[in-house]
Amino acid sequence: MTYKNEYIASTQHPDEFWLKQASNIAWFEPPLKGCQATDNGYYDWFRGGQLNTSYLALDHHVKNGRGEKTALIYDSPVTQTTQYFTYNELLSQVAAFAGGLSTLGVSKGDRVIIYMPMIPQAAVAMLACARLGAIHSVVFGGFAANELAVRIDDAKPKVIVTASCGIEGTKILPYKPLVDEAVSLASHKPSACVLFQREQLTAKVDEETDHDWNTLVENSTPAAPVAVDATDPLYVLYTSGTTGKPKGVVRDNGGHAVALHYSMGAIYGISEDDVFWAASDVGWVVGHSYIVYAPLIKGATTVLYEGKPVGTPDAGAFWRMIENHKINVLFAAPTAFRAIRKVDPDAEFFSKYDTSSLRTLFMAGERLDPPTYYWALEKIGVPVIDHWWQTETGWPICSNPMGLEPMDTKPGSSSVPTPGFNVKVLKGPNEEQTTGEKGAIAIKLPLPPGCLSTIWQDHQRFKDGYLREFDGYYSTGDNGYVDEDGYVFIMGRTDDVINVAGHRLSTGEMEEVLAAHPAVAECSVIGVNDALKGQLPVGLVLLKDGVSVDEKELEKALVQRVRDAIGPVACFKRAIVVERLPKTRSGKILRKLLRQIAANETVSVPSTIDDPASVKEIESLMRQKGLVEVSNSLNCEA
Ligand code: COA
Ligand code: AMP
Image (cartoon, rainbow, N blue to C red; front, side, top):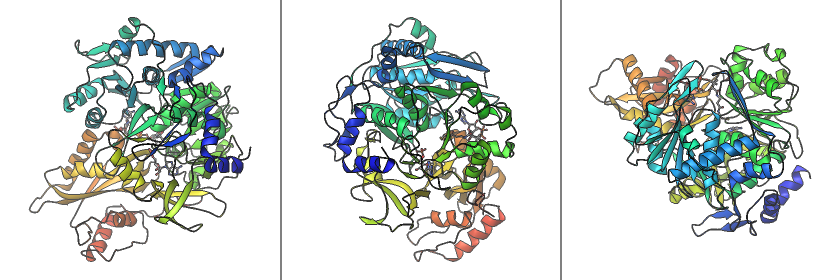
């Protein structure tokens, strides 16, 4: 079937289309209905169907005689370890750990927070929760204790699963003290903590609440998969919004499994015999969907990599991985390739390895800038595919459908809407933008299976944040345009979310941290373009009247505060003191204007500005401090 036929079928007859896709996975009770309206004014998929996601990812393949096939490869240059897990082995570890969790009282609907480095136990813990029908919430290791505490208070987990340490390059980062601090900061107290002790660092244990992973597993009885409703939540994954409070994206079991299974074939062109590597982290949506669930539901081999694109040990790390594990499809963030290119511009490391197994390279997490696209295409010599998605959708909204019908790529575009996603560029409610004109990108409801069903414990926030702006559409928060061939170009966010090294961060949250400093009266955090990480946050701070500080000392203090409150992942390294911030007469800081100055774009000064002279003043200060881009290295053609 060609892409066009498939796309039309999926958008014109969604129920028929997705019920057919649903028949490709092993349900306990198959669904009879596709998409249905819900009492809370939204939709759900496959109501009435029953399944278990860990069963689909593991037991199903074992039952079909594929138990000895490799399910997961763990490759860790930072610990010099490689481990292979067959489907039989992974199933037995997951069932045992699920048994352990159930002795701690975890059962269907309970939440479990997983704060783990990139080790196989992270995937085992996720699948074990799925097995019990418990809802996992994985928190990325680069977040600070305070961020973890916020998530503990929102998700109210019964248990936290962690490890003694993470390893970042040559640094050993203790995780357990951070978990202890988070629990002490949070109002909700989980009843137990399961700790995986790594040989690089032994964490101190609290005899009352902590349980050693190995002991727990040894004393447990393997747990059977629990049947859950298609609409029951599989996980909550927190992502940055415009306010300081992260949003708990809720993913169901049924739609998720159907959509991911479909995507492995239609988008990535993956079969059961392939090796798929998503070079991300289980703490992000890419890790959830494409390190853990999708490749295993498909019955392929997945790869879990504990290392970096450079420095572990060198810029040949990705090529070594491809050669060693015969990787067929690689999925990574453009920032990883910018890092490799920076260290090894001529790709000398590349020629040292046999990468002939690689068929396609997919990129996401941020826009694939044309210079990186051309570099990767020229040096690696396989199709390089930019594809666009978000935590909320859980799988790509736009991509080149390599498994259905490979199309020409256009640099700077994430290609065409994926079957199921009715993508529109809007200039106002019910008003579509003309071809080639920039506007807000929205998706006509209903969204296909696999997308978020709500925000955890806050359906109103879900409605306000995504459904209110355009009646009948889901607002993506991105803007861009569609060209005459139907190719979608994503140009950036319409809100105050920034993207740092493929990580989504809220400037509003950083502003809250800066504003809490006793010397700061007001502030604004903006993303400035960065040749390696895409964007970096910079704080512009206005001091309280009568306060005088050493600017360098203040910057140091603010950097430390963001690190302590949000975490090193924020990469917040710069704060400058300003005399005034441009504002509207009603007192709103003109952040868009600041972003335009930083990007060296034409500045649109609104008529509502309070003091037009403040624009020239701030522009000149930003230039003086080197915050205005000289040439946009991420946009030039090659
Ligand atoms: N646990 C604890 N700390 C972590 C962490 C983790 N899992 N991940 C990152 N950090 C810390 C790093 O140690 C660093 O701390 P530092 O300021 O003390 O040095 C900080 O967070 C920033 O990390 P990072 O953004 O990874 O920067 P880097 O300079 O170490 O590496 C890249 C740069 C480009 C190589 C790296 O960002 C990268 O590989 N990015 C790809 C991102 C990705 O896959 N995104 C997923 C979307 S598909
Ligand atoms: P996250 O939820 O962390 O996956 O971040 C989602 C956001 O990252 C999107 O809303 C976009 O702003 C950006 N993004 C992700 N992939 C792409 C892409 N291929 N092109 C442009 N922007 C992207």
